[in-house]
Image 1 (spheres, one colour):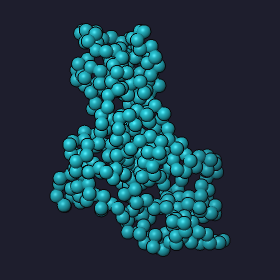
Image 2 (cartoon, rainbow, N blue to C red):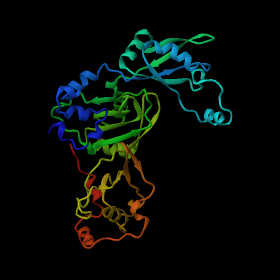
Image 3 (tube, rainbow, N blue to C red):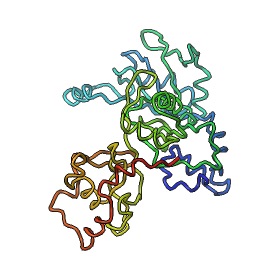
Image 4 (cartoon, one colour):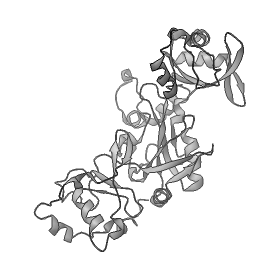
Length: 352
């Protein structure tokens, strides 16, 4: 089965899916194969660059003087609530060019990617990290420059043939709270050391700047490894930070219990991420599968996951239960033909 059969392009982030399956001509600027995309993005940097280790007395003018040599830029200052609070009471009298920061870092956003390359050429390397001398009014300090390679936002299993392999979206998980320097391959190493083989991973990036947003998606090779991850729900990264593993909710999935018979073939709105379920449900099937006595008493406290933009969100309550639940004619008859706790039985299914 070819990669183009995948129904959920948003799983393949960094526009990998769109680029892999796009068949437009060269004028679009898009490669027509995943191999072409990987080659072209391998040495391409995001225009957004992290600058860390800044002295407290640094000003925007100081930064412009040092980094403006490499091209037109915008300085993205970190927002600090304590600074903003006092600024509202006693607004600064100095211009923005003399503004000081107190977070120790800023983001430099260049207009052109070539400016990032010019910057890196002026840096010195210490322990595989980039540094540049930043002069201020009082002294000169080495500050860290942390560029982001676009190719670091994704990982493909080295045994996977991109032309033939089918990525099973039902084996995908969402990982939040990922530190921004973390590459896709770093997440894969942590996941595989705890669970099992990963066939694909991607870092969520800003669509314009291609810079990490702090989240990732991972697709497991085997269903059993996915279920293990969904049971244990966390993984320790190389830097020691523990991040949470959540289900990745896919758009336009049918109900796994009734297959659309009880909701007019509409997409299932809910996904149950508990290890005893891991299935999509329509409203009717959710109620019958989680509330019926005594068979499903242990499932009654489950709450659904839903899509929220590009991420996954767990709801505190079941939305359709706000009022009295009523069922249309024939629903009860259909449910009598379905195993109410089929979630437990279907959990044993393997996709590989």
